Amino acid sequence: MSKTLNKQPKPDWIKIKLTTGDNYNEIKSMMRSKTLHTVCEEARCPNIYECWANRTATFMILGDICTRACRFCAVNTGLPTELDLQEPERVAEAAEQMNLRHCVVTSVARDDLKDGGAYIFAETVKAIRKRLPLCSVEVLIPDFMGSAESLQIVMDVKPDILNHNIETVERMSDRVRAKAKYERSLQLLKNAKQMQPDIPTKSSIMLGVGEEWHEILQAMDDLRAVDCDIMTIGQYLQPSPKHLNVEKYYTPEEFALLKEEGLKRGFSHVESGPLVRSSYHAHEQVKSAERHKDEIVRS
Image 1 (tube, rainbow, N blue to C red):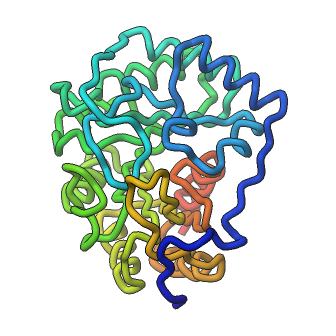
Image 2 (spheres, helix red, strand yellow):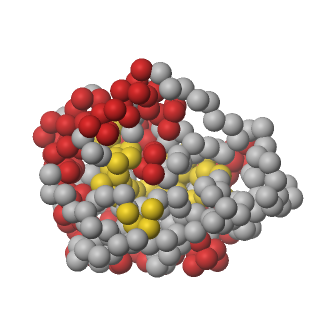
């Protein structure tokens, strides 16, 4: 594997294509007019230009202030004051205007709420389906502090994909994440499968925060042990000098090798690349999961 890089210029393969055409500007204007937030903007996703130009976006509900301060994340942290019960309907209106076929809904962590925001998640899924019955809906949820009751609220509306990110390998988890626990995240994914066995589960890790290669493979094994179906793997990029340094830039070849390792372990889909983020090509992942399910039924 390549040597550790610390505070060095980004390699040539970490390049973002800037595409700010009509679709991008239209979506940005729509989000502002409906006072909606997207994780694309708040987390400074490198794929925002590509995704918005292709009329896809990941809605971020429950406001834009997170109760946690993870050392990798650019989302604002503090004490939230916003709880908008009309937000699900506005998200559904925006999804309808965008004529989405696959919609991703995520949120900040809301540890100040008794249910962690599960009710708003469920209402958002229902509102989207009411307006767009043919649109698949993926939810990327926080850990709800391990509350099975909150998770059940979300699983009861049967999202097409249940996504929860472990973010990093077990050894680095406490350093990288705030309050979240590696084992608790795995337990959430396991509980989701037990509640709704037919709903694909998904998780993601970012590379370059100090993990070792064998630990990445162990994280894959840990996810498969709780029957996680889909995995995404991307490069950590430092959003500001206050955040964790990039310890290593992985090469495209290493990401390709990790994809092979994941597929060998039985994931139905592995999205792996330097600029991959949890929701990148999400519409393709749900199709891949469906094909995998059909193959199992036929076999």
